[in-house]
Image (cartoon, rainbow, N blue to C red):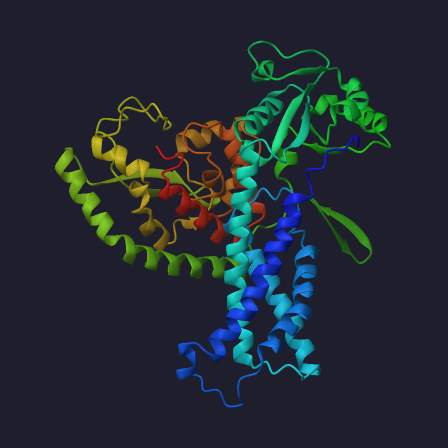
Length: 471
């Protein structure tokens, strides 16, 4: 019996099969649309209808090309840990590349009678069918994991707060596809630690001997910065053995910094910090914000009118609530929200939102659960004080606290604050540790792109629909 687990074959194989079926369906669908659908009333067929064998032959030649393009971007991994909204933009880009290769090939080999219209239809239908196939695969993958199938066996090295977080994350979310066998550390965790619920496998030096008996596939290393020598010994002891190591730094600086090498006239420089947005990027983001805001205002205007009437009828006080927040470059601005709390909610001073908060009015609880109370911030975006996507703005009182206690906290203010952000769509809202939110906020600052913004917006819409993490 092999000492290695064979759980990295089924999902990639099924993904390839579904992609082949999806592309074949796209070829047949584009053939039907061009020559037999009602579209023929608007786009006249002048050169006759080619035999369907032409499309079947073309699909047999070019589907492997699409698969190779997908493979080059590692879209056939056994565990992709992704949402369809994340994968969609990658699929569109790679399908476009595949279509360009196909167009170039048919330009030199004219036996295939493909018009530009057919290429457009094939491009659109491929995006549709491949996305649908990927959705089915993702659902199937989650279904298998939830039933304990195809799980990847992992162990945790360390017992700090990061190790505890890893244990809770992977044990509570089987859909991630991992089975935690236990943890290694010099001494067992205290009873107060969440790791006390996990199996203690022994000291770190014992891991090397357990790889084959326990069939360990991956070790998640969560050692503190003063324990890094143990990692070196661990890597040395596991030489020649098949195991994957993934390290989770415990310092925010390591989690969020993007160190690059830039060469100027032969001299290599380590770029420790970069400007997050160029002037053109700021113009692009601002244009995107204005367009999305105008569309959102038109769509949500009836909802905001109903919300305003409900607030006025159910509790005394103003409809809107203005609160000073800190935004770009540390400058303050008045953030606009629908009032969801009693007028005297903060007579004792600023308090962070909590799930157990009882200061909200009856209608305010509904507004906050559905995030409708945030809609007036569209006016902040339209005026240029905020962006649709960015780190959530905080009150000056808390900024003064966090900037001295949370490393790199002020890095959040290098871009405009947003109505929604990378931290929020990952469930970090309300009274979650500010250190965790800061990691995600800084990651957004250092990895901004327009596509990233669109992904976050799509994730936000999904979270609002299912009222996830809102309170």
